[in-house]
Length: 148
Image (cartoon, rainbow, N blue to C red; front, side, top):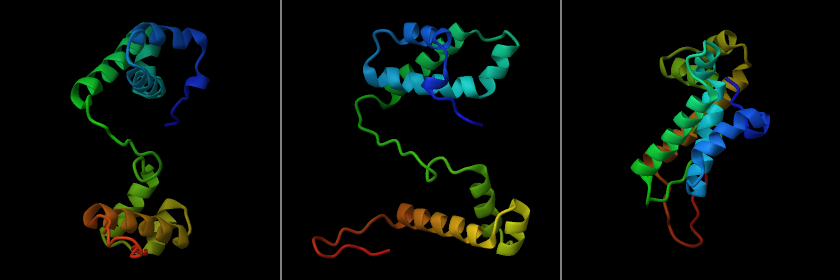
């Protein structure tokens, strides 16, 4: 699924959202805008096409999602990562799952229509991420940086 950007939306699509989040703190408005773009990109678009969910309804849903995040996470500082580590694509997830299940790299490459080297790169990236998540990063002090 390609996630729409706010710049991809027409003024008619943006207006209901801006009305729904008027008066929200700026951070909540940004969260609602992000939710709205995702919702427009995903299953909600199918519901809208069947006239079961209007743009106003979708905008209210995005605002409610932002409000819920504020209620559940408000007051704490959270880092929201971006990039493949957080949003690993389906192919990478399939590659890692197949590899962890014992499938040979060449077979995985053939099934996923990528090179064996690319499969190895996906696995290596997953190993590094997994190691950092499990082991954490050691702080040995100045002059003792941990090398990968």
